[in-house]
Image 1: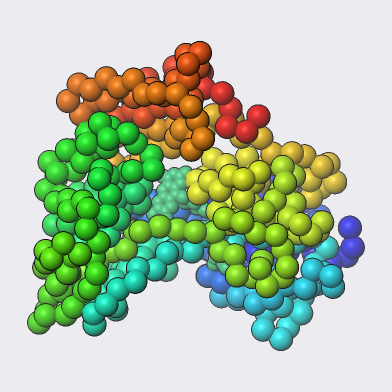
Image 2: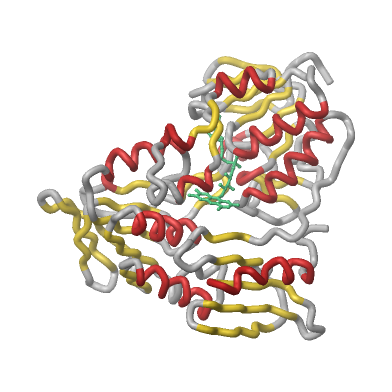
Length: 383
Ligand code: FAD
């Protein structure tokens, strides 16, 4: 390696876990982290449980950038956005400033999909994808009673549960037939919806929000089916997608994410990617477990021992404590069928192929305890 540092772009769980793993192997390698935010070390999944637990953004920050820099012997440049990458010259640019790297790691995460919305209430529509978003939203929600959540995927469902527990009146609007559409079969989704309705959450499934307007102190959301909903503040949870702009500009191969091989190497040999921005052998997995496995493998590779990442069984937990959910999502091209046992809000859904091999499951309520046994039957996600 040259004398230039390993540069990691991004201080999310992917960036910091990589640094921790690399430090275990190599105490002296120079590492620089460049991050667009303040570099606080926090667990992003906690953003959707913060209202129920009454946690401020400061409560959720486990360590500051300065603490992390000292603990892991690295340089952290906070509130600094990388604006360009010159792969041939092995430099990143912060505006006009070039910074040389020996190896570059992209850990710049995913961005929120912004809603296309008419109306004059854009400043009252919030997406919550980092600690700063969370702080802004908490400040804006102070003293408000009603929240409209757009989207009924994992993040929408979790915020609905959390904010209902935190004392808000919640409306959820989403253009789907049942909630958690990409994760759960309808029977399991209905159990979760039923539990959330028990907390007072109102669901409006099918229409889109097309316009949000200010009316006095309130907001009025207009739906595509003609219905209107009065609310105080809006959360958009309609989706996340890997950040790609800089990778495209740098000439890296991209698809849904920044394309990497099993060694997490992009189409440029000295540039790697992991976490929400990466597409590993066709898989974009916006979860913590894959990025932890990636951080362990990539640390070894950066330390000179080329290591392929493998993913074991990686179930997803949806943090809806009113009706807990554990799900091992079924890959889109899988052939097989569901068998579904429903007992009130306790649902066990198993997806098996014609040989009886378990390929995925969805468990809700008390059935969640069966996940350990089912995990043993599942094939690894990426052996
Ligand atoms: P991020 O945390 O998004 O970090 C990206 C970093 O890159 C940031 O520091 C950003 O400032 C920086 N950056 C971006 N662009 C630039 C640039 N040009 N220059 C410099 N820096 C830049 N997953 C689970 O497994 N379980 C859960 O329960 C769960 N709950 C979730 C709840 C919520 C509300 C959300 C939003 C996500 C949840 N997830 C959950 C997903 C999980 O949190 C993410 O997969 C993970 O945190 C992604 O980490 P990351 O480091 O790849 O990206």
